[in-house]
Image (cartoon, rainbow, N blue to C red; front, side, top):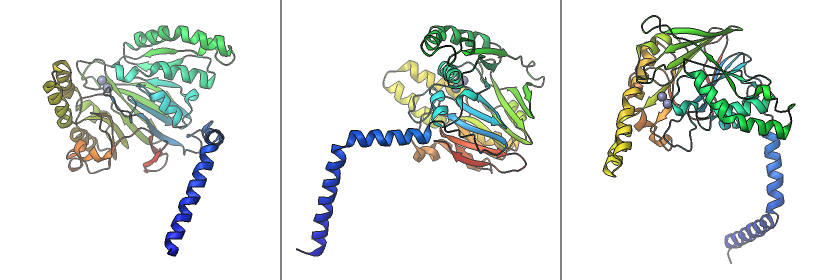
Length: 362
Ligand SMILES: [Zn+2]
Ligand SMILES: [Zn+2]
């Protein structure tokens, strides 16, 4: 037998023995690996060591269309020591957890509008923020008029669960006063009268809400965060709108929604052909109150922002192979970087620099 064949047989034999040994001890090995992995992750704080400045972490880049890779719309904004969430779509609270962002330290949520996909993760987010931080006051939830009804509804729906948590873990760990949320509604000036209002100002951070065009959904807003010379705009759900361009003027980074009508068209044609006339019509309807990737690029250019991140990705595209089909010719309409947002991405704008650094938290 040639030496090469002997070596090969010996290698297969060794692998077989190792495989059998691992299999016979699979439970013990699994338990040990699990404990080590947990120890490496539990208590991780992804904000520790971040430079002073503005940071936005994408905790949900999806839409109402099911996509296992993308939670519902959600952004976490870190400004110095302050942490906020903007929208809380389904699955976003779990993402925030996995990303190592300290849920218990979230000081407030800013809602852009009350479409289900932007609020259907509010219950879990409020519950996890309460218990993770042993918070003794409800979570402040900023939003346009209507936010009080939404928050009251979630508080009512979760009241029984809240009582179970306190009953089971005790009031020291789950103090009843910290459960749920408290609505902080703000009013926008009338259309065409500036279209924006400052909703929070503290420690050098200014948060401005601005009107967007998501009709018939009204009110609908986006938010601009300014902190120590850096600025970040979250456009909310909107058709291409001059109010977004005005609010985003000169910002470092804009996170803009994007819907590709050519791909959505394929969905509506297929649904119609299979007899789902209602869903086919819904697919046709949604095109008129969203922005195409190409239009988002035009918004970024007109506003003079440095970088464009697309989020609220419609339709659900399975992986990055489809990004060119999704983006179309967006790159010809904006000279800066265009990034298709993915859950777990973070963009950092350190104070005192013009740098935009991209990292991944999961
Ligand atoms: Zn919407
Ligand atoms: Zn939406």
